[in-house]
Length: 410
Image 1 (cartoon, rainbow, N blue to C red):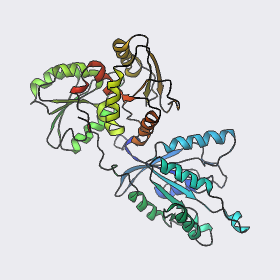
Image 2: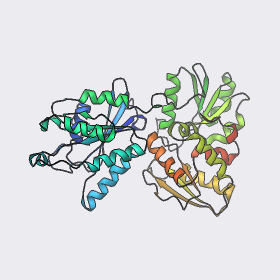
Image 3: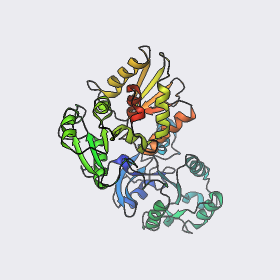
Image 4: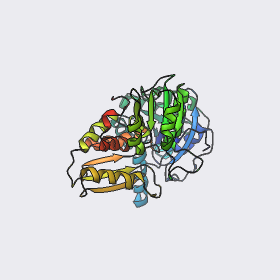
């Protein structure tokens, strides 16, 4: 990926699900116009999910995910199926591939598509838009029309007939992707309603050791780019230069800070200026801001022996004064007591059983897409565990949460 490419976490995620050898890899190659996924007549060639980013006219940046067959067997096959199940959590639009087995046809038998129908229903139950696809239609006598009719009768969904070899149906499939876009996908923005064209916005961006030399961290870059696209008047400074910046510029309408600098920025905030943080903005962009804010308030009433999970999206080596492993735990113990038990997970390690925890605190999740974050929100809601994020937790612990602007909340 070049520095000008859209990060994967901000792309529409399109997952392909089906049995081994149902044509998923060939379809990814056909859709992207490149040989991205390995194609083989041997079932089970795809093991780990394969990601391919591209642009689709009229939709924008997307990433296709080629998954392992959900009918894989054996101990390794079970692990592959688990990875396929995990992939569903980050999927914005799913394609379920149906393929008629030639050997079954020769004996006049009817294929068993119970697994395909089961997966289609499971994905729909997760509120994921699903496109049924009859694949490899060039290999069947009727071009897949009988199976298409069967799918329509069983699900009410019209399946797309596709041949990756001839290209039949590939353009129609792209059209179906546009038709199945989540309702709020293209309307979603990082800064939401907190600023408009012409707003004076000041970004306070301390450059600590977690920001590689010569670069900004991803949330800062993404926010800055969106503000420029929205025609805001943007200024930037580090925390130590904030007094000089405020003295030199006209009063900002909005100040966006790194959450670690909340205290210093709040103390210097001009009257009439709004305050938020990159992490708070991403809480609304990637997750459920109202749930996070309510959970941050509940956090203040936790007992001194509470059990808290801190979930990081990155899998970086912990650094000196790391926010998730050092600064945030220190703030929590200072406010709630030294008897707290605090666990930290990173990357995709996230416990299925959250019952031992009184609270989950998530990072800004710049490396995850919204669908994946919302799957974690759903798990917390289902198990009745409050969940907030770094920015809102820090603001609450500092006693300034009510002064922070949260998109969609206040």
